[in-house]
Amino acid sequence: MARIAFIGLGNMGGGMAANLAKNGHDVRAFDLSDEALARAKDAGCLPAESAAAACAEAEAVVTMLPAGRHVEEVYAGAVFDTVPANAILMDCSTIDVETARRVAADAAARGLTLVDAPVSGGIAAANAGTLTFMVGGSDEAFRRAEPFLADMGKAVIHAGASGAGQGAKICNNMLLGATMIATCEAFVLAEKLGLDLSRFYDIASVSSGQSWSMTSYCPVPGVGPETPADRDWQGGFAAALMLKDLRLAMEAASGVSADTPMGARAAELYQRFSDEGGAGRDFSGIINMLGLSPRD
Ligand code: NAD
Image 1 (spheres, rainbow, N blue to C red):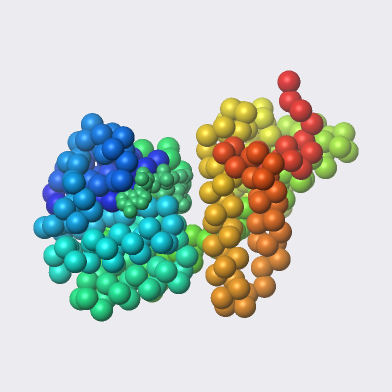
Image 2: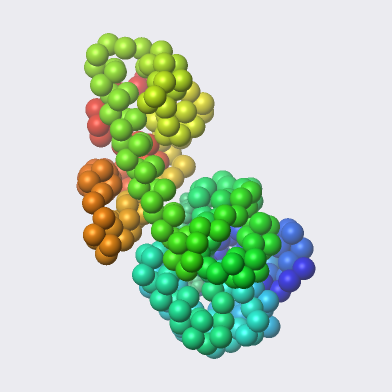
């Protein structure tokens, strides 16, 4: 059992902090929202008055914040000045690679160790403790972070040096955004060609068009396994978050002059879907914008 500071108790962080407490850790939790703090208390964490108070005497720090500027603000404004020198710092937020590397370098300059450890898996996986963590940092930093991350997930993978966790996350999600749109397009075309969509699923899911977007997250209601499409595309992974990740991928691509035309098109299409009211819907709901006929 370790004393852990957990900062950012939102949709994802709330469940993650609860799992650390469930695994016997002494979790000192902080969030700007009183509601989030109250939920963390109910889940067995000890609410702290500030991020700095949470970090005092912590052996480990976990942050799960919206974006790079929040991460920079929390580490520079509270964590670095209060945390003991031997604590391991883990940022699990999805942020831009450049900020991730900068914050880790700032930590190192103060003799502290910070890994980027973004996650794959949504709110349900955060609650169930079945997230996948992709970790950027040295071998030694990974070895120290792994046991804590394992208490919140089903897989903890060392992606490489500092920033590599964020790199892996945005490359994965760029691939996901593009394959989801391609899968939706294929279903829409199949429908317009008069095919039965369940029959097309049976064929494509065992043929070369198969992908996770088709067989684990089919965007068509009543086809394949149960997915958000069967719940009117509610819940699941919000299109706004997919758009966020695609923008991070495009920013990273432009920083290293990588040619990513499919990712760029996916970002444009998710921007349009969000502008047309889809931001809060599951990202597979983009199939409606692409022309799937209304379901009963
Ligand atoms: P969220 O908005 O629900 O939670 C963020 C929390 O951070 C909020 O409770 C907010 O009050 C708190 N916060 C913001 N600034 C703070 C500060 N200075 N000090 C303390 N608390 C502060 O977001 P979320 O859905 O939990 O996502 C968190 C991160 O995880 C994001 O980077 C997101 O991209 C990533 N992510 C989300 C999902 C998902 O399905 N929701 C999946 C994978 C990754």
